[in-house]
Image (cartoon, rainbow over all chains, first blue to last red; front, top):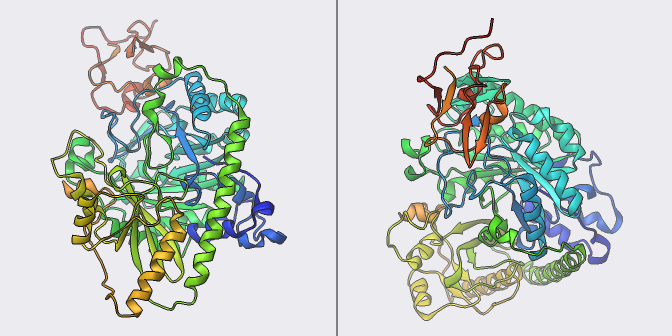
Length: 518
Length: 74
């Protein structure tokens, strides 16, 4: 998935720098475009991210953390077939309330998918990217996947195309991917060592034959890395997803990181295994545990010196619609779409997106202003804060309405997005009666404060009781600037001896707070 | 015996449909069916039946024991 736009000259480069800070260092894009440093006059501040790469990521919510506050994506479930079996996937299981990869409520034909894209693009102007991500593998369904892309390109050429694959068939389709201007491809690579792979993949189907065990993993790994090399050689941006499975590939993912970086991957997304017995997966049934949020963060941190790490992935469904972290799929079922009168018009979308770009500039300026004040402070203190947001980079959600909190690490170098904590159950039906408030507080126990647009008296008192400061004085203001402003006050209070800084650590914090709470 | 699909196990993923060398598999009213007249158990094409090899759910594409094994025409 991807997108573009041009605003460096008019909006200055500050915002670009911000994106760089968030996405980390840019070594990973070395092979892309091959132009190395930007060296572009007023745009020099974009560091060594080549212009063409910046253009591709700046409104792709999955490739830029900053963009994910503003731009939305949708997946069209046109690819039901798969060519490999993974121990974390159960193709028999489906549930409308589940939100995780491999799940889709209805499969679509390419024609239906194109109609759905126009419907969504007309209703959600910030929708910039369409991806095919299953529920099987897009390249195990090449005809359906590519037909879908052709139709979208014809009907809505401003929408960027993207796909997410296991990589087994990738090398066979690189030419078509390039021809159809699919300029973002995600490959799920969980191992480069077939012995480890054999513990993750029971079998693959390749060249009309089923392979099992180490042989299967060996073929898969070879094909994945070959596909990655072929894509990056053509300047197609590649993100690598890796499912972190404690005790199986957790330590090994550092080697995977090095392998994909050396082959030109742009971004590495280490995401936690979702494992629960009711999903009926091999891992769910064997009791394989998911990693804790701290374990995931530690691994991401250890890889970050090597390349860009994605920390804002929401592990979304194969038919997700909307901003990351929200799913408006239920508004766009085929039944509803068939009843819609869709008139696709690029112009309102362009105008809306121009407004987004302006807001991003304002947001960046506000951050810079707050940062300037912070630069004077000298402190080793780092704290985590949680934010309730509905998007646009604003603190604009009521505490009680939040389905997730975004987590920022605050230090004297600024505010850094480090992850998110969902507080909604993956499946509404399968969990106990623990109150939502308990779940919400449990999800952010390691945070010093929670920023909300509004909060009721009762949860306020319980948060304070739990040692988390509820902060509502920055309602509807920018997240980064507000968090930095709050942090300055916090440091002042510590320095003046009004409060004592205490580290808050919650080793049980998980990306999926509900599983830990259950 | 041609192969058949145990409907209750089928996920409807369509993986078998595109792999069948005889084009014997199709979706009828949301369920995937193997046309027993068309199925050759992949004889003459592949060493292993493709529907069985690609199916994500074990024991879903199975030999239909109610029918005789496939014999290549003389």
